[in-house]
Image 1 (cartoon, rainbow, N blue to C red):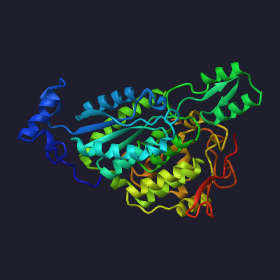
Image 2 (cartoon, protein in one colour):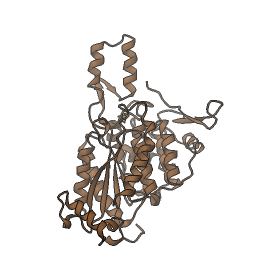
Image 3 (cartoon, rainbow, N blue to C red):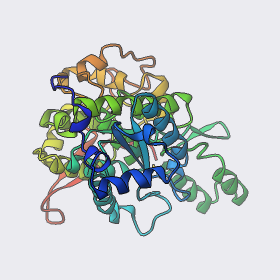
Image 4 (spheres, protein in one colour):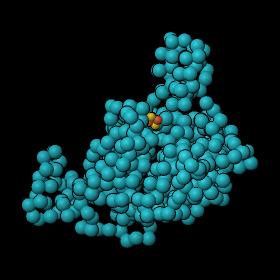
Amino acid sequence: MNKDRRTIDQLRSQRWYDSPDMRGFAHRQRTQQMGLRREEFMSKPVVGILNTWSDMSPCHAHLRDRAEAVKRAVWAAGGFPVELPAMSLGEVMVKPTTMLYRNFLAMEAEELLRSHPLDGVVLLGGCDKTTPGLLMGAISMDIPAIFCPAGPMLNGKWKGKTLGAGTHTRKYWDELRSGNITQDEWVDLESRMTRSNGTCNTMGTASTMTSIVDAMGLTLPGASSIPAADSGHVRMASACGARIVEMIWENLRPSDILTRDSFLNGARCYMAMGGSTNAAVHLIALARRANVELTLDDLDAVARETPVLANIFPSGEYLMEDFFYAGGLPALLKRIAGHLALDARSISGKTLGEWLEPAECYDDDVIRPLSNPVTPGTALAVLRGNLAPDGAVIKASAANP
Ligand code: FES
């Protein structure tokens, strides 16, 4: 990194912890109240872990454990980890819609980071609105930040069929109402479709958004594709803890990563994945937080130039677990490398081109080559008319029910 490394007294937290006055006394006193010895936290960078775990968010049910993996790596790297709860938006559980709360989460994340003595943050989340909500707050606060995606759940299987969360719930609800499956089969499906913790295994908003921010350089490279139940996911969380301590010393902030090029990289990834229409709203919101110009017209133009290569429900036939084994996001991005700004920076310290270098594809049906895209047309299209004078995004590539 081209920035000089910072010293301990240049860190934000030291104004709280190292102050000789009564406020500094109170911070040290209250930290020791939790059983920590002075030597364990003094003169160390303070790493916040914003955790969106809750019992009402099965997509995030494993994030308590992942916070522990982050903490152990922060301690080992010479930092002082502190975990803070943040609003948990379990997509299926929250009514009437989590979209009402995305901006609440963004405000909460920003104020948690502003009001506490933190030098950097690891953001734990992944269900649909959580990724944009956490990152909008972190971008506004602009301290070193890593997004640690919750990871997709395992493939759903039932009677020899592969089932995608959400997508097939609606399909089989229609099958029940049509008399094509029995009530007993419908009950059996409840326990078969969603087999592990983690976000939906289809290319819904969750995997669309985590893939986009991965391509933009805000996660460790390829982190978005690792299934939540894979032991590699625990190691990825631990690696986030080690890397955030380095980033604090390097003073590597979201504003160093996020440029128009990085957003366009995210947009190209979005289209090549055949991503969710909802992501257009979130990607533009993230760009506005970063003071980067990005419009629906930009997304429309990128969609027209980018074929859908990820053969994942609902545009295609497979699920995120298959995508991971096929090489995951790095393999997909390598296929569209000619359309990407490869000199874009990432939180890993490498450019996009550098971290894509070792990527390989292991299954040409799951991650299609440019010569054989999933659909001949675009993933999305922007429509304008009397019902949507400012434009609306529609999915143009959906093939599966
Ligand atoms: Fe959380 Fe689908 S319900 S990702």
